[in-house]
Length: 211
Image 1 (tube, rainbow, N blue to C red):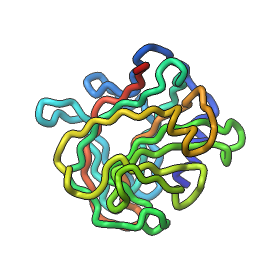
Image 2: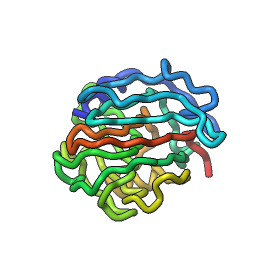
Image 3: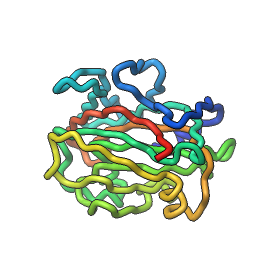
């Protein structure tokens, strides 16, 4: 279900190319530019300033909804996804490989549209895992077309701003065995609908870069 809505929103996409392609600049972000899809209730997303940093604040309490932006990214020009986030209230340990444990305090999706065939839509989810080791990856509990990659895990780094850079071309090749030229959309989600509980996270700027 959390993959199907992405396909529905990817049938038409906007194109933007640059040496640095901004997806979300929290200083100027307008939530109206993002589409929200609910799976169970609504995660509360608000724009805030925390420790002098503009951020998107997410609170999920036994709920799940994601923010999605249609944006075509040329990975030949800007293959690196950059972002920062902070999780103040992580989840207790869940088996995220099961449907009952398919919850994440913070996750950032990148997607390749399957066009009219939603089952061909592919997504890589970079997640703050509650239990899987950093660097591990696994099939989403609902579909193998979505791959989960743990870039952070557990509670040790909660309350800290953490920055990441991923080569999406290499990740797509390693996870799906395909060379991908374009990304068609990006999504943000903090959710607690399957295992229950409450999480609180902050998302900073998100952009693609050439190096």
